[in-house]
Amino acid sequence: MIAGLIGGGVLIAIATGAAYHIGLMTSAANACAMAFTTLCAARLFHGFSCRGKKSIFKLGLFSNKDSLAAFAAGAAALCCAVFIPGLSGLFGTATLTAADFGLSALIAAVPTVLVQIFRVIREHLRKEK
Image 1 (cartoon, rainbow, N blue to C red):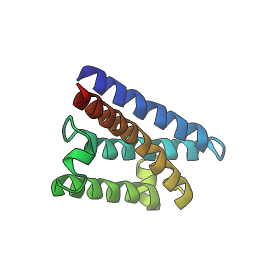
Image 2 (cartoon, rainbow, N blue to C red):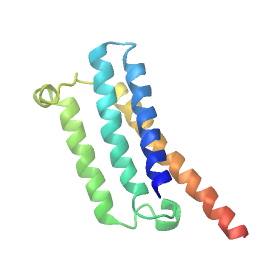
Image 3 (spheres, helix red, strand yellow):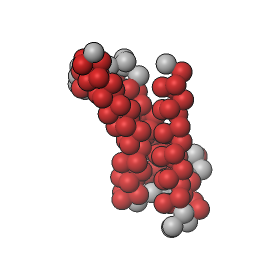
Image 4 (cartoon, rainbow, N blue to C red):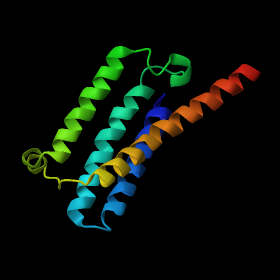
């Protein structure tokens, strides 16, 4: 369990760092905004991995309506924090383009996808025993 927590945290940290470095190609402000977006979105995606020890394919991605509602509320709040100029200033981030936001969200999903792939492989290997 501890290894899973550390592994998930390391994957999120790598994703956040990658988004930051991609954002640096534009500006330091854009890099910070992309890192902020990636970190927040990665934590939202991570919520799907916290639902249990089984993969979301076994649990069912749409089986927990509260989890989906929490994800949607968090995603809406993140969009407000990034796209509304007054709020982005409050959080100290630059306003992102839709392309940068989409790239940040895609990068943020990678740690959860990797964790889920690991779980599917682990479930398959346990079946064989």
